[in-house]
Image: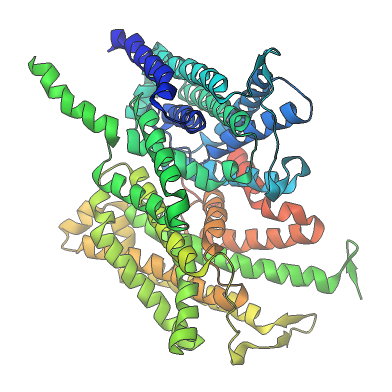
Length: 312
Length: 295
C-alpha cells in the first residue's frame, strides 16, 4: 500500500493538470478541489480516528472570513490570508476539539455541532462578517505579490497545488506511526489507552490538523469565489461535508475527493432546476448511503478489487 | 414600578416567563431524545423536524380540515408517533448493531427531507396559528400579568414530563423499560418482546416531539425552519444535563430556558449563545453532564 502512495498523488496531479484542457470550467474545478480538501481533512477524523465532528463548517467558514477580511481590508496577499485563516481555524480547532474530546461517541458529535452553532451566531452578530449580507468583493490579488491571479486558469493551478500539498500531507500523516495510533484509537480506544498512549493528545492533534486543513480549504475557496457568507459556517455545511465523505467512502484517502466532486457536480447541475428540492435530494442521498452504501463509492470499489488481488 | 438591576420588574418577569416557555420546549424535546437514546442508543436528529411537523400538522388540520386545537393536541402526537414507528420498523431497524453514528446520519438525512418538503410547500415564512379561545387573554398572577397561553404551555409540559417520569420510574412497564435499557438481551430472554418495546419507545419519544410542536404552534409562527435551530440548542441541553435521568433532562431544560430569558434582559445578543457557553463550562467542570453517569 505504502509504495502506491506517490503513484496516486502523481495520477491526481496529472488528472488535475489535464482537467481544464478537457473543457471543464476552472471555477467549477477549483470549487470541487476546495471541497475535496475540506472533505479529506474531515475524513482524517471520521475515517481514521473514528470521531464524527458535526461542526466542521466552523473551521471552513472562519478561515474564509479571516482570509477574506485581511485580503480585502488590510490588502494582504492571498497566500498570507490563507495561512492566517488556516492558523485561526487550527487555533479554533484546539479550543473546540479540546472541549469535545472530553466526551465520546454521539456526545462528541453533538458538542461539535453545538459549538459550531455558537460560532454561527457570533458570525451573525459581529459587524466584521457583514452578517446576512456576507463579505463581498474580496480581491484575488497577486500570489507572493507578483503572480496575477485574476486569470481563472492561473488561479486554478495554484488551487491544484494547494490541494495536492494538503492531500499529500494527509497521505503522509495517515501512513505515519501517528496515523497508525489514530487508526488504533478508532478500532479500540481503551486498548490503545492501556498500551500507554496518550489518547486525548492524539485525538486533539488530529482534530487541530483537520481543523487547520479545513481552514486552508475554506480560505482558498473564499479567494477563488471572492465572497464569504454565513452558509459556510452553518450546520448545513457541516452536514454537507459529512455527506461528501460518506458518498466517497470514509476511511479511504481518495473517497472524500470523489465524494466532493460528486456532490459539487450534483449541486451545480441541480441548482437552477429544482429549487428547494435540493435539500430533499441531499437528505435522500444521506438515507440511501447510510442504508445501502456505507463503504462509499471508493470503499465499495476497493472491496471489489481486494479478493482479486489476493487470488493473483 | 419597581426595578431589578435597573430593569422594570414587569419586563424582567415577562422575559423570565418567555424563558420558561422556551425551557418547557427544551424539556419536552430533550426528554424525548433521552427516552429514545436510553433504549435505542440513537440520537434522533430528526427530532426538531418532527417538532416542526407537529406544528404544521396542527396548522394544516385547522386550516384545511377544521380540526381544532384540542383535537390536534390529542391526534398529532398519535400521528407523529405512528410515523415514527413506521420509520423505526422500516429504516432504523436495519442499523442496529452498527456504529450509532449511522443512526445519527440517517436521522439527519430524514430531517433534511422533512424540512425540505415543507420548505418546498410553504417557503421559509411563518404561518400564523390562532391561540384557542379558552386560552386567550392574560392571567393576573398577583405580581404580574402573564398571557394565559404561556402559562398553559408551561403547565402542559410539566404535566407531560411528570407523567412520563411516573410511567418510567413507578410502573411495572417502566421497570421493564429500564431493564431493557440496561440489558436488552436478558430482558428478551425473560419473554419480553423487546423489539416491540423499542418500536413503541421510539414512537413515544417522537410523539413527544409532535406534542411539543402543537404546543408551540400558537406561541410562535409555524415555519419550516422552526425545528432545525431549536434541535441544536436541545442537543446542547442534552450535553449539559446528561441523558441519565428524566428529572435531570426536565430541570436542565427549564433552567436553561430561564437563563436564556435572563440573558435577553441583560445583554440580548448573548441570548442565542449563552446555552452553548454554559455547555462549554459544564464540559470543563463536569464532563459527564450535570445529571449524567459516565458510560
